[in-house]
Length: 482
Image 1 (cartoon, rainbow, N blue to C red):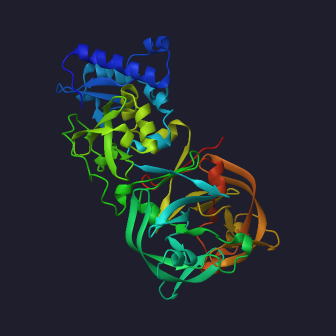
Image 2 (image 1 turned 120 degrees about the horizontal axis):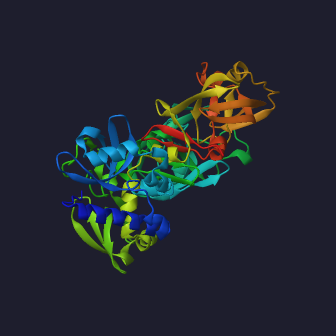
Image 3 (image 1 turned 135 degrees about the vertical axis):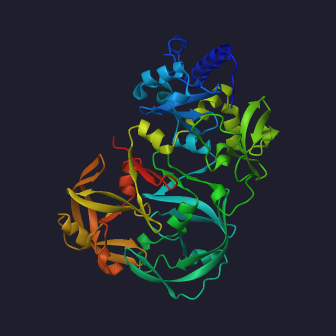
């Protein structure tokens, strides 16, 4: 927290803010000189005499919401601020706020990596998300499947990785039926810095009763909602990346559980329970990791602050290739700006971009959202593991979808099942509307042994089209319609 004792220092700070935006965003000097005062990071002064550098992002009739340099936010009563600050807040217009407009350039990836998430590129096979993990120390490709309540291994992969499969006395149910499964003791399953130790995961023959073209081939299994939820996963179709929090896994090598913070220093400031997320994860060439923020750099050395508060010098050449690129691009001015923008939530960032946000319902590890089908109110299961969206036959008929002859097939766990083609004349989720979409309907109710209370699977085909972002921490799904 930076305190300034004179108005001269406050003015200097405001000039530095304008300079930071100019360097980072390429704003012309003429435009920078004509910035409306206050539409930027500024120094607010409390009636208690304390000063704090912050950006105003929202207000009510009686309070202002400030983003602080340490990525916290403060909901501050007007009465606790100076008269000048109160006048500024009253005249502030959220839609025209320069700070928020400039944050539009911040990607979800930048936002999350600023908070200590680790990101991975998503490989798409059809519409399925594939990531490469290490299963018992060996490379293994998993499908990211929000519709799988628990993770699952392919029996062929378990055997290749020298994992013993227990008695096949368990049952796994899929869209095409039931298959026997057995428990496997998995010593390690890792994705980058996220590590799971000594887990029991079910294994089944994922190719059972499937024709050659529908088989899993080199797929090791399903990385299901149980593990996705634990890692506070974020899936971004627009950026083709998936993000995990290693500190939520079983790994203890990443430094620090939480940063020790000084007193808030301003009325209304809220400390985040995971202060260590204010520090980026860096990787070295020898495989080590550490959380830190860059303070300054030379052409060859970074000076960083660790979670513990200690300063340390790190040769840039010792970092991974990706982190070397990050270090080369780092500037003090750019970091100044990102420290504030990085305090936005994913919802705040995507709302600025006119995304539609939906609070989803968790049932076990599955996630559901409400919408309509042909103007009938329905609930959808969000399923990244479904290449194509799919309707339950009974629910489709009840929602006014005419289903054709059952001469198609759908494939999944359990093999294949008959399906009929239908047209969904109108689908809505909030303000998002899709019309005249062809899909298949199959008797999911009969195979589950009960009437479903959801209409079907909102699959990866629609999520790719709508640039979906799914967050397990904020428990929301975001959709953007062009």
